[in-house]
Image (cartoon, rainbow, N blue to C red; front, side, top):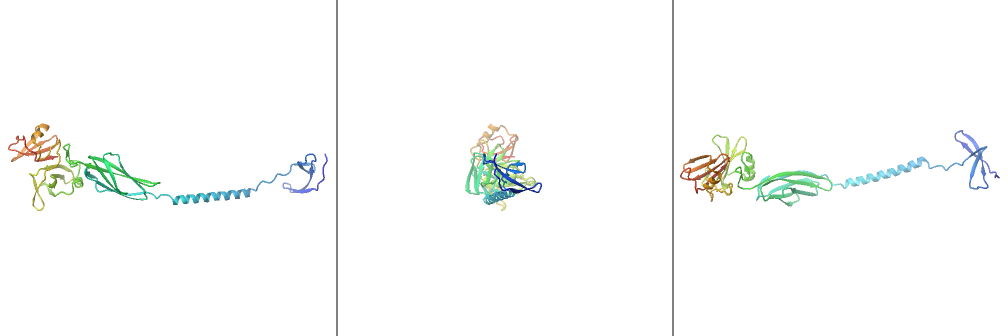
Length: 322
């Protein structure tokens, strides 16, 4: 094999720290291959040095920094555009008990919301939006219902609910009168449904109060210690009470049914009562004013007649549940 002499080159052996020289030996037959000779030692040419680690580290750090800055910028922008937190401050009603021909008004207060939803699972309840924060609630039948309200935006939501009662006039089950149930409801419900009485008087023993609504034909007897309604009386215009000005005020005939289609001082007569309920538990009288009491039903009727057993064709002038 022929070789061509080349000017020797010198290199530093990094391990031994010695200076070496080499000659380039060119293969004439294979001109593309080269080898280097250190005396008798034949080695391959040095490979091209890779990119320094420090440069790679710098590039990586720069890219990572750019990514973090971009993410933080996006995050801040996103926070700035977030919806405000919804705060449901209050939910109030002008009353929680009403008659079916009346309307209950709800008022909502809050911040941060863009949408309001007011709903009930009771199909007889009607909800009318007056303003975004004022709603009117009514019902076509006597019922109790929960009204559910939510204030929301695209991100947050707050809920509240309120219980409402709709009552009907008249006597139900010989226990409830004008939506007020004896031995269950207190004087506050009387005020809610009927307002303040025309007159209040106290019993002779001081234990009860008589709340008289002459214009409605009603009187409620309230136990003072518990404020519980323990008796409700319905009158005809034959009765009166004396007001605080010491003036006699006639009751109006109680206008609604007292059960079974019966009405006071109307076409209903005592023989109709006897036919349905039978002979009363107790009979008593004061002059011509007769009283029939039915203990199991806890009700009392009064009528005018010449004798206690003379009830045929006699109109009801008074009815009471206790």
